[in-house]
Length: 620
Image (tube, rainbow, N blue to C red; front, side, top):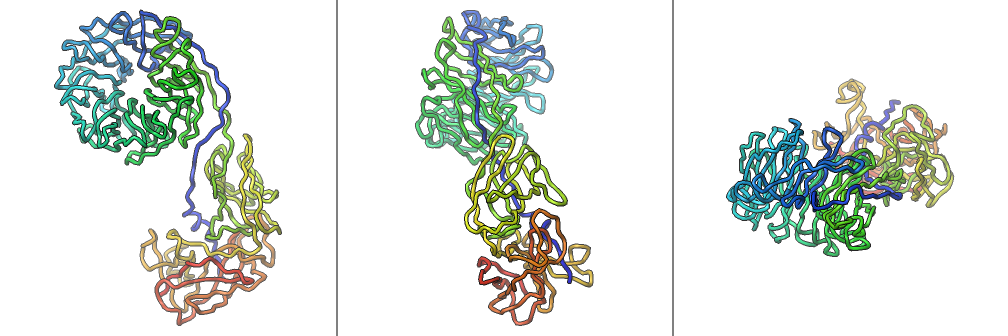
């Protein structure tokens, strides 16, 4: 008798899911700088400089605003004070160019009073690269971003037709207008600039316009091809004043000033194709009205600030996972700052720096430091996340392969070969208090073999890591027959044995049974009368000899109870039914004539327990 292990075939259709969550410890907050009239009212985020210091801008220092540098210890120095002719009121902050110079915008001043683009050399020399005239844009609030082409890209909140513009500018000061907002359809008033995602497109937000007048998310390429990804409606957020950040998962994350469940703003995720998910709706004590962009920390979580809300209504600092688990880290009191408007800066794992527009000793704003390290994440199991790997039945049999889906199930991805261990990468699992055998672990998915156990009914499943444990349940039965299915979740997983070497797989040893052709994404062949076939499944009961769980196995261990097949209402008894590979059963038979053609129904029965309905086998 020929046997074949289909573990690799069936494993190829198992999809891993990964979510992120965390439990959070205490953190420490301190004011580094109490701003005064020299560098007052900071709206912009800090950025790291090449010299180990941080750089930023103030909007009211020395009348027209300043550029400053500050050390991690809190020593602040004014680098440049604007005089209106070279710009005024720099809201957007700075970006460090690949040429070693700093670039930014002012919302006012310049030659025409509509704002400017400037370059600052590390020596402190400032050069106005461009002064807006109104028709090409006005009042640029947002930061610049350097594109992969070496140009700097930005937005204006006004100008053009009145609703703002998107532009790029060279380091030599040549500005090109890429898009003029129309307000009614594509948005108006972009306040926080652009990001360039890994797909090469630039993405940004407008605080108004769109179909509901509540702002948009858009994308544009270097050739000025523009499209709206999403128009906010209010229930999903509204009036986004902050820009976006691209997470390590490829999705874009951002905040809205208004909207959501309580009308106090939201945190959202949007794919680059435009599917938006609200992760959190602010309600007051957790913060409200976020204005600053999010950042993704070294731990993979998102961090941001709210302009208002918290315990004293002066704003808050928060963290949120990409799955939406939210935690407030700090509530501003006024004396330690109030009304933060800017994104945070992580300078080393768990050390964040930021700014608040007002508050502090002189009510001119503060620069602060927040030290915070997320606790090691606890494992969690998804609802309904304990499922058979090769079965459509929710009930499992001892020795059956099981997948567990959840979050933080392991510290990394590991696969085991040979006899299966009881612990892998520091993760272990028990089912009904008995240790399960692990084959594969990852943060989002585990594959394991259930232990030998005579218990029937609902039993606990416990995943244990170095950080804690998570519990779910599964139903055990001594018989839980089910056929394994191909990728369409309809056709039985099976093969036609080819003794003449004419098969498409296994060096000609077999073909995969299915509709003749490649409709499933790989070559399949409908079986016919006289073919020797093998069908695969699980849960057909004890075997003799017994194949114990936890051991690699390749052979032929027949079932102790007869398995009956019903093919298109014709009774067929397999020539062999038994375990051919660890946790996997195989039924061998020669197809009789008179079964019909096309997709015909297939069902197996052992000790009166039937396989789930809806399974078919393709015949010709």
